[in-house]
Length: 193
Image 1: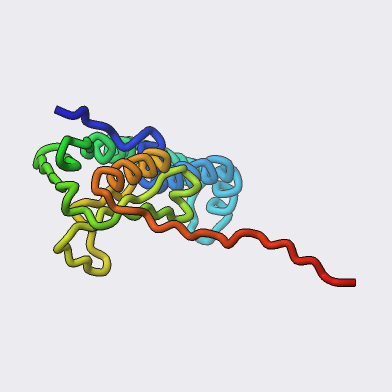
Image 2: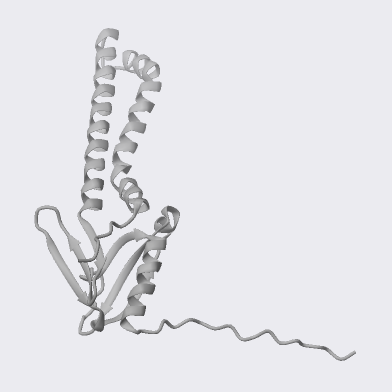
């Protein structure tokens, strides 16, 4: 039985980036409210709301605590979601097929025979390039690719070096030749005097 592989450490960092953004923004807002606490208290005390100084301090303090608690909860949930997404996908290269396992509770195992693989594409968006990850799409015979749908043979996020190595391994096992653009040889152009 082939050994199962994870998608790589950079993939986990990418998932963290995606899932912690809301918590980080809330934490930033809480920090701004904390830094501007004096100004907020002064402006609310002097406003036409007719609030006394003690009530305003309690309101600003409660808002700050609530924002901080919500930010911490969002960060915790984001970390949990990132960990679940990362641990729920593994892959392995078997003797006759690529095996992709997905899921925590509802486990699915997808087996893609090498003989059915027609092409392997590695794509990298700007945010993926920043984190050193890629998307790997495996096109198989008889698969109708619809716009916006995710293929069964897709690894939406995987470390870039791992994606390139897996692509090379799959192309080697399928005997599909990769088309590489060749540059024409440089010619010496001698201009007559």
